[in-house]
Length: 343
Image 1 (cartoon, rainbow, N blue to C red):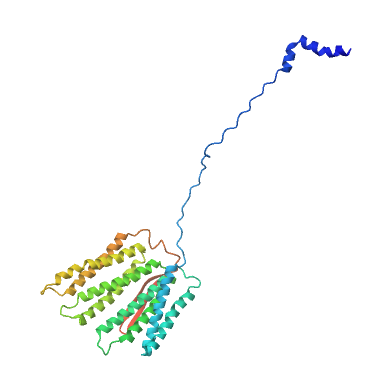
Image 2: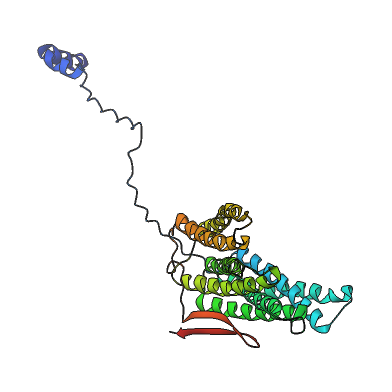
């Protein structure tokens, strides 16, 4: 019986062989798709546009600006010490130099404490420029008084040191007021200081060159001193007025100084024309030298261009406008005239 049951499957396979093949034949295997190879370079990612914003100028003074004020304060202190020695009538050289030495150190020390915290941009340059301009005004007034008066009425060294000390002090105070109220650019202060130097030099050339033909140096220097003093104040007024609408770049200032030197040098050949015996006095050539110097300054400013500098590009918040700050000579000395408006 067991054999019969065992042979039944075999008999079934023999009766239907296709079923046996269907069971034995392997089932087809579906091919799996291969993964795509990675790209050789990653696709570019979109980049957001960069909007460049012009950085605002620093509102704090620079190291160069405060260094200029340190130097001016040291010179101011020495000058005040000289004035003290002259007023006190100290004759001993060793004793005379004590006050300049002490005050020459005290000046920068005072600036150190004034700069705590750091002063705003433009204030140190305005103070230094004011001291230089004021001292120059005092020297100009004392020089003209010295050459235009007799020996009995001359101020002498004491008057010169007094005028210089007073002028530098008033100029420093005026520069502080200007820097605090107006916040001028340091380039404007440098432009104003340069303007008084150019004006004094050109005015002195005009004054000496236009003096009488028969006057020697002893009398012609009166005209030179007067011309220099007038030119000093004209240059101050012109530079201060232009600074309200034009702030020169350092490149423009360099070009103007170079133009002044080139203009003065270019006028030198004219003096060869005065070599003859019957020719006019050679000092007349100074009028031409003053003219070429002035033209050289103007040419330097034009060649340098204006660039991006303007009075509005560096202006800050202001609650007052100082329209003029001019020293005015009087019969007994000088006064400082200041005028402006509040907003």
